[in-house]
Length: 236
Image 1 (cartoon, rainbow, N blue to C red):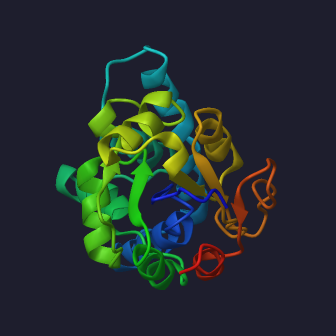
Image 2: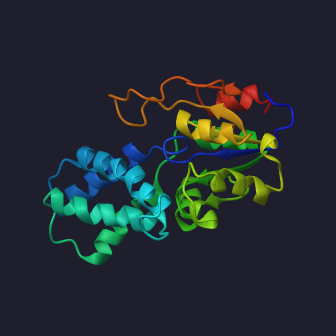
């Protein structure tokens, strides 16, 4: 491990929280309560499938800056129509969109982060907006020292402004900041800017058929199977 690392910044969706399992469970419960039958796993996968394309339109200038909550809501409205789920008023749709604010952490996340916080400053660096990440931390008990949402930088990862912006706000050079993620692409972007890197795979993130991000695809500084092992490797 690089000896001078003083802060860890974390990808959130998939790395810290189980977005897929959380959303499927919440939507299934909603459907049962409302008497709505739908293929909730397929809807959730489609919702997440629009994540990168919708952000790329912002990143490449096809539309003005908007926060992730807005992108999620636009996708949700489209998918409700495509899946034949009618009759939901605006308040109900807004509540469903805020399910992203209430995602469950992976079982090792809170305890692992608590250990890591004893030695390092820890914070999320996510494409989520600040309100989303703050509400999620409150709901899930995530012990962050700070919260870095994409709206602070008005850029989405993997734009350099996000990684370097977090380093600037931490008042640390990139080499003293480690990006921790379950996604090789996220780590590659951080590594190219001089950040240290930690890979923690989440083989269940996309369900039982996941085929990507199962193993490290770069020379990352630390590789660990979960946050407990990461804490151990980092001397916490």
